[in-house]
Length: 300
Image (cartoon, rainbow, N blue to C red; front, side, top):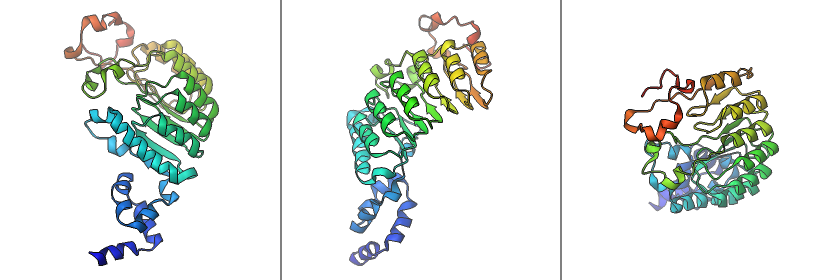
């Protein structure tokens, strides 16, 4: 056993770098850095940490209620802060979930070269840390703040004004039309906190993000007015995802998007509401036979 350990520890640094660079983020953190002292030292090499991606860990068919707890959030924060203390200026991509303002504030301080930030499903990320990101990470070109309900149009405006290279924005909300798919996983009070100011966010996007090429706003509550603002203010959009945007009609979308000369793909808010989740008292205020619901897949 001692001889085997000695052989592993005596690998040249070049060999170690080659090995560690081929491992996933999870494998690096869970095993490789604990092999021996030389491996732990090599793990701190900044060139290994241009990208910090935990998304594969969360991309499982079943979401865990444990991910929405303060204890789990604390672990994610601790992991990110530990990484930031050693990588300094080198990190260019961060893809995590369930972090908080505590770790994102450090990202804003230590990652001036950050280009991609994906922080989906972070219930305690607020305008405070996103505003710091806006000022501290001016090279940002992709931002995913889907399912982060404490972020408002105010920090969206700051991101747009201070990050001129922003090309991709993902600001998707959970399915408030049929929240049963989140039941037992996402806390009820968080589901009920779904942002209502769709047009304010649309105005912030339109007025500050003229270079957007990819925009996802699934289940946004924006109106035709908000969509018109986006299409006028972001003329370079190539992909526009409006899935679940129940306040938009097919005519609204056609009229607004007609000005987007670069548009290649648009996902419209087609609906399918199963009888099992349909309740007249809940959906009756929708004028169900209005043109907004005349789509091929809308069936009751």
